[in-house]
Length: 231
Image (tube, rainbow, N blue to C red; front, side):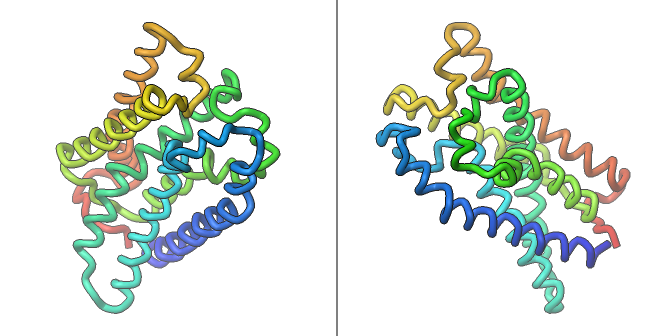
């Protein structure tokens, strides 16, 4: 199982790096050069979208995994790298990944214009859309099944996730009210109590997802020492 985990990490890292390279070479400039969005929409680049943050986080997470694996194969003891890897998975990579996948497909089922207008199909191949909005979750779950991770303390994990959620929502509000760019079409159609409810939901929903990640680890590996790796 240990060898399988190392191979899986390498494949996942290569998968995300290749897909991001494809996006940069074949999608990003086409979207920005088209008439699909006004030129002012280029403000902030891809950092406007939680999907893109999730993509960056998956690349960073599997990079941590690969570095720890290489250190192990070189006979080193990567305890600090394991700690960083497990903290990042529990506090950022899994909660954000779960939120992106679930919220995207829920809103898509209601009205895809709210998250991914049909015009984007001209630029995004189907497989790339699934890289961004579907495959994130099963890849993380397979990783959590192969490797016994040790989540950080609940205080540290929840604090990290809460800080990221607050910073991202502040960024979204700045874009909306300060630059007049509402990143997600749903924010333009909601008003009053519905708008407030949606913002509160988006801000607080990642917290139970954090505990869902811990629950998944226990389901896959049972109770016991969380730091023990599956052999």
